[in-house]
Length: 229
Ligand SMILES: CC(=O)N[C@H](C=O)[C@@H](O)[C@H](O)[C@H](O)COP(=O)(O)O
Image 1 (cartoon, protein in one colour):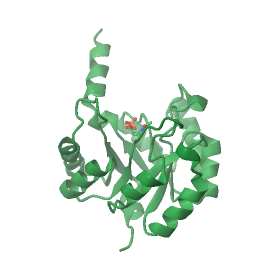
Image 2: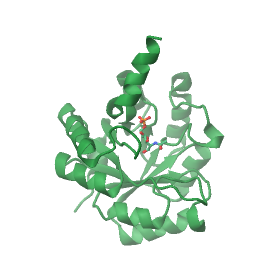
Image 3: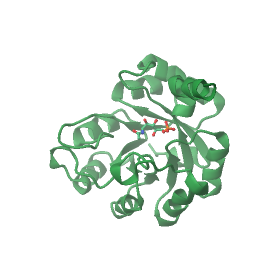
Image 4: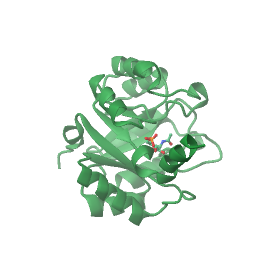
């Protein structure tokens, strides 16, 4: 079957429905309902973590999906779909896109990104690969390895980019990413206002992923509480 993810998401919103163990909404049932709400609002696709959440959302929302699996390993800081094992498990759900960390940092068990990409292309030729990058050097790695989609997901979340926000200085960093990327760019990470999402599309992004500002009530409520202090 043809992968229609890029067509479905062009210029549109992708909603990330994620709650890790320890977060108040950690539950595949709740993530599926979040996805249903996103669909009713007109979102074009869903981004989700873990095989069980992806499957629950597929059953409930019937939208294209970016899948990932967050797993911590002792020998590496990489946690977004870090090894071939998680990539295979996520791709086997049939989700249209598999997202994984592309930050130039060492991966668990010494696995090499180039080898993983080759293997994924062989085993899942119809699955698109999304690079969750943090900086321009990572965007260049994603270019060289032929990733189908380049995301800004990890910008601000690695030692090299700590404290940075993709929206700083009217999205100065995002503009550079759009210039550098040889494949569609998805803006992701701390996009917390509709106007910011709109600006990302104006600047040439293919789509925008919004997570916490829609699906993490603890984060949303904390913003209100802090404003009243
Ligand atoms: C850095 C990292 O692990 N990001 C994760 C990636 O899947 C998610 O926790 C984020 O919610 C997602 O990227 C959307 O971003 P925001 O929730 O800021 O709109």
